[in-house]
Amino acid sequence: MKRWNGWGSEKVDFPVSDAAKTYLADIIGQATAGPSARFESVLKHIPRSRLKPHPLISDDSSLRLLHACGQSLPDWIALRFGTVDRFPDGVAQPSSEQDVEELINFARKTGTNLIPYGGGTSVVGHINPLPGDRPILTVDMNRMSRMNHLDEKSHLATFAAGVTGPHLEAQLRAHGYTMGHFPQSFEYSTLGGWIATRSSGQQSLYYGRIEDMFAGGRIITPAGKLELPPFPASAAGPDLRHIVLGSEGRLGIITQATMRVTPLAERETFHAVFFPDWASGVSAVQQIARSSLPLSMLRLHDAAESRTTLVFAGRERIVRILERLLQARGLEQDKCLLLFAVTGQKVWRTRRSTLEIARDCGGVYVGRRMGSEWRKNRFRTPFLRNTLWDLGYAVDTLESAFIWKNVQEAADSILHGLRHGLEDIGEKVLAFSHISRAYNTGASLYFTYIFRIAPDADETLSRWKKLKGTASRTILAHGGTISHQHGVGADHLPYLEAEKGKLGMQALATLARTFDPEKIMNRGKLIDGRKQS
View 1 (cartoon, rainbow, N blue to C red):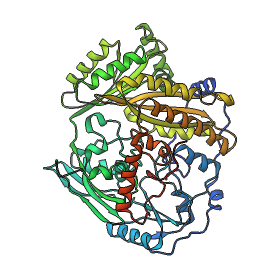
View 2 (cartoon, one colour):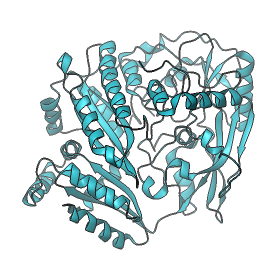
View 3 (cartoon, rainbow, N blue to C red):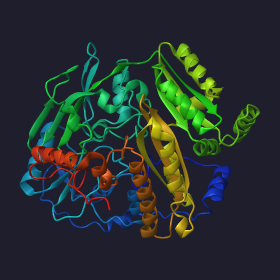
View 4 (cartoon, helix red, strand yellow):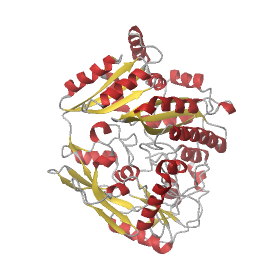
């Protein structure tokens, strides 16, 4: 069973060692365990539903609470402190496209706001009800999860959009295929959610981002059905797939998607290299990215993230041996860890070519063990948020993408802003970053920051707002996108116009009016919202 106020299954924990606890206390300060409100106490605050009765809709209070929030840090603060104050008036779980059409027609007739809901894993506020006079209906797509068709000649698979990552991959693997899309939320997020937020997976270097996989599909909108045939290519005007990609529920509900799939790779191996510093690691990643080698992942951790990774690995004896080995090779405190994955047929040749570039940049190869451990545990990392909250620390992430000439300066500036962002109130922040995806022209930067939970919800939220706002403004100042893989949601909305421009925002608003003339779809997301102050 999933946690109602945390990440993932209640059966999965991420224990940390005493050494890791000491590490956090030394950098951030001793902390007091964070609060954890009781489910029953929050239920008492749920108001009566404003929805008219409908056979497809439940107004059960427990179900409404479970669909009130996603996984952003503001969501966690509200859930853990028990201050959630907005809930959907009802939850529907359609089993067919006919059900979805009926729900949209119901919403049009009753003036109800619809929120499409996949796995509830949004970390930027995509699925949260907003205040207003209209009743709110959350449409949970989890019952629509089958693979409807596999075209093995064309390497195309059509799925109902509510399918989660593990279920999608299991259905494909039974036939010898994979989609290869592995975001960190893989275990709980859905295909429809990936499309609606323009998701990127950890091995997108080989398999592509979601927009590279999305061949076509169907979206049910208040204005009717939008059919997207899976052409291999087309010059018949603008590609309408790209108005669905990243649409965040503003145009309608994605009900099925035809995806490009790949035969399972003959071999796949994960490897680890350490560099003496960040600059040498970035130089290697840039060269490797332009080499056209069939790698599926390049993930370069900065020095702070590399240290934190080793501390939290929990295998102190092995880590001490590794540290001595690297020290003997001249790699000290500034050393940076690169993880790379080789997928396909020419695994050893690709590994050799990659390591040649790495060694020319001062890299030291440490084998496959660290890479294999990372792969085995890569979907467990979000569970660390539960553990750290219980220890008294809040964790959040943010990400962007920059052209190569801006990567170094942007990383330094954002980390400086995060690390010093709470100095005025005497609080310290542990912040680090990694390159999560490298392109020919640039790279994505992914940041994690950890700070102490305040005694009350408002102060904790204030700390988050200060850090998030500082980082977001710095991203824009250095020419980065406000989101490389998490989407816009509510958290990034104040900064979107700076990236799209006024005319671009008008174009998005016009699209929304075309497909959703009654303005019932996920109001307050992507288009609406106050401007950046």
